[in-house]
Image 1 (cartoon, rainbow, N blue to C red):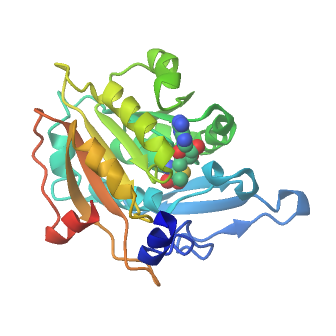
Image 2 (image 1 turned 45 degrees about the vertical axis):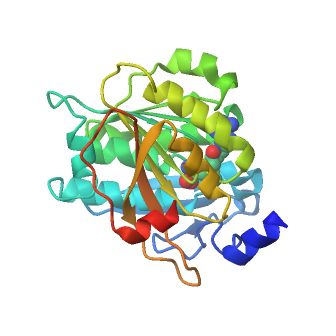
Length: 280
Ligand SMILES: C[S@@+](CC[C@H](N)C(=O)[O-])C[C@H]1O[C@@H](n2cnc3c(N)ncnc32)[C@H](O)[C@@H]1O
């Protein structure tokens, strides 16, 4: 019943993954064995260069590129070109200290596009993470872009990080010293809401006196129940929508980008407009 309501609300199939004709282009490798490999080149106009991302669709959703990752790439690219006026500028300005590189952690990186883009456009030290079985493809994509990252003064590390208490040991290894925690399209299965929120609280340091940090999350809403995640998150975080994409063809909803800061730690960010509150 609940699922039926969801389906009436939003068509999850048409909004599930990036269509293959995505504007960044796509190449299917020629030989039969490699047919399941898709390689996308994502252009960054700010540095006139590309990020190469390999997808392995037959291996599951963690090996495919989801729409919100490209929204983050676009925002980061714009920020690199127009750092004073971009939508990320007020959020990031509140964090950087002494012009030292930002430390960024990406959760549920999948193919790693957003984290790699952050390392390149911000010259940041980025750790991309996901479930252990996703790590080899993530490492492949990080290696494929290592030269571009290094040219821009950034770095990317790859590490397993399972959300929830199961990931306590992972966090111990990775550390918690991050200015920005980044994620795209990580709110989709309701059984993952609590583990994700747990890991966020640990990383952001809810209830602690910790240096300023922010969780930036791009999200394409597919289900009414997504609002449960936001409702629970508001117990610990001040949540603001600061960017909204135009809906893709055939859809009523576009990707929305939110900042989450732990309560009592105010960053100067701005709500996009009144529409955004209906997305929460
Ligand atoms: C829908 S995909 C999004 C991937 C990528 N961020 C993107 O936008 O293209 C969700 C990602 O979350 C990861 N994930 C799911 N459950 C997880 C968990 N319990 N711990 C860590 N990562 C998880 C998946 O492996 C997957 O890569």
